[in-house]
Amino acid sequence: MRRTERLFQIIQILRSKRRSVTGQELADELEVSLRTLYRDIAELMAQRVPIRGRRGQAT
Picture 1 (cartoon, rainbow, N blue to C red):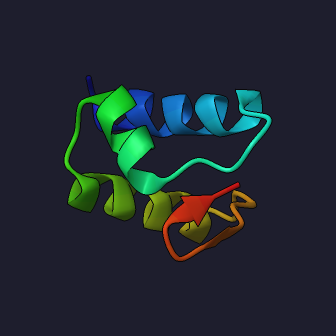
Picture 2: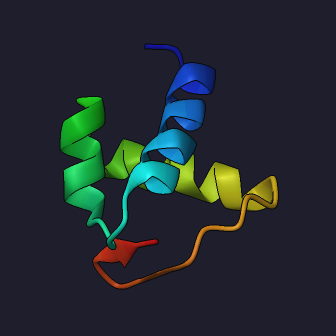
C-alpha cells in the first residue's frame, strides 16, 4: 500500500471507530510497524488533520 493510500485509510479508520483506538491496533490493521504509523500520524497532523490523542490512544 502506498503512503498516500495509507494516510487516507488512517483517516477513514479513525472516523469509523466509535471509541479510542491504540496505535498498535491501527498499525496491525494497516499491516505496518508502529514507527511507520507514528510517522504517518505526524504527517497528517502537519497537514492539519484534526487528530486528538493521548499516550497509547488516538481519537
